[in-house]
Amino acid sequence: MSNSSSIMDFILLAFADMRELQLLHFWLFLGIYLAALLGNGLIITAVACDHRLHTPMYFFLLNLSLLDLGSISTTLPKAMANSLWDTRAISYQGCVAQLFFFFFFISAEYFLLTVMAYDRYVAICKPLHYGTLLGSRACVHMAAAAWGSGFINSLLHTANTFSLPLCKGNAVDQFFCEIPQILKLSCSHSEFREVGFLVFSACLAIGCFASIVLSYVQIFRAVLRIPSEQRRHKAFSTCLPHLAVVSMYISTGMFAYLKCHSISFPGLNLVVAVLYSVVPPAVNPLIYSMRNQELKDALWKLATWMLTNNNLPPLLFTFFRVYLRP
Image (cartoon, rainbow, N blue to C red; front, side, top):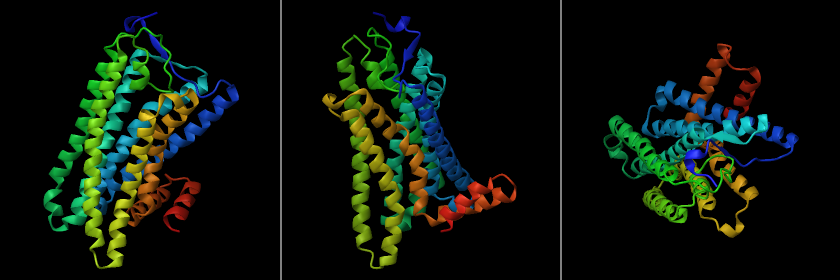
């Protein structure tokens, strides 16, 4: 038996014990991580460099890409290092930092998705007031509120989690440090802290979810009243990527944290954790660029400039030509 003051490190859950599978996981996660870096990095660069994309929608998309890069960089590099070097250890300070930053980026992303729903609502339902309600100062304030709310939320939960005495060992039943798994190591009525964590988080999540649902109810009502089929299609096309990201984010998060303990086992926990912590940051750039011609044009312009300056491999340029110019 040990307490938190004597714990020097934690033991994370391994994806596999066989050396061949560990190396396979390393290369798989390396590919996913590079794809996430490339996709989100290109969106950030395109939005920052193309003046046509200096609008509230793309400003929030830039912030979303920054949060995606932060969340996947918090968990995946450590998992890759553990698979490559055949180790499972993470220091106590590293675990605290990993838990704090992951929860910070995830919370801020959820708040930002709520803000992005409001942006779509104003753009479609109140287009004449769009410039007034979502001016540059208002956009900066809303983005800062999302980041700040995520920071405060994460700080409170991290301090609450590691203030408990940990006396049930140091083996974390996950490939990265997260709050429910750390609470399982506590012997000081951690079930009450866990319930409190779930209730507080659920209240915030339900509030944001209600705001998103209300925004889209108003959006769909407004879109269905548009007489032009082409304008209806354009309005829906600006909302579908956001809806897809929100649906994926909420569904994987709910299944991960609200699934029954009777169906919880290490293998399933690993798969679910990958679904909500690794897949969304890698897939979000693809979702947002798939049906957005303005973003595709900006990315094509960026790819052409990079090839001209010998900063883009020809093979990668071929991929952009196939994807962006079908």
